[in-house]
Amino acid sequence: MAYAEKTSVSVARTKAEIEELVQQHGANQFVSGYKDNLAVIGFTMDGRQIRFLLPLPDKQAREYWYTPGRGQRRTDEAAHTAWEQACRSRWRALYLIVKAKLEAVDAGISTVEREFLYDIVLPDGQTAGEWMAPQIETAYETGQMPAMLPMLNN
Image (cartoon, one colour):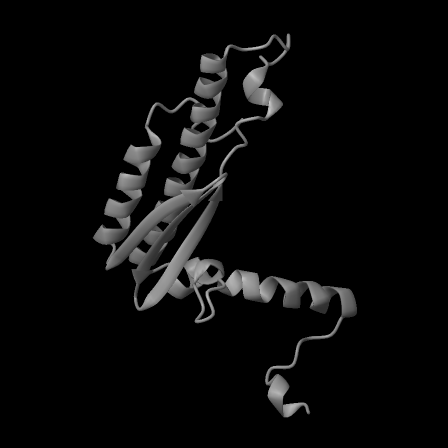
């Protein structure tokens, strides 16, 4: 069962709620957009740029064109409605995670850096998580930690 699978809150309203939420918590920049099946939000908070990528459902996926159980083909309108519902659900899940992280920061349980570490944008445009993930994978595969200062190992 997907979070907010029956929500009637539009994607536009959820984006606006996320923007308002991050502003209330001190963000001084906000951006949102999409390309194909990938949406993005970004904001700046505590001097850090933070970016979330939100994979959107594929409009052509069988689950939108055929009913569950019987597998009867839906009309174009019904398929679009099912796809829109899945999009609304994903956006509400994104809102939930951003809100939970900001609440943890406000409560003093955590920090912006700790909560958003994976999503902090580095100077080259990658997120910290995108930069670290291959290194973590290599460390587990080899059992070796990456050099802390690789330029000194030459």
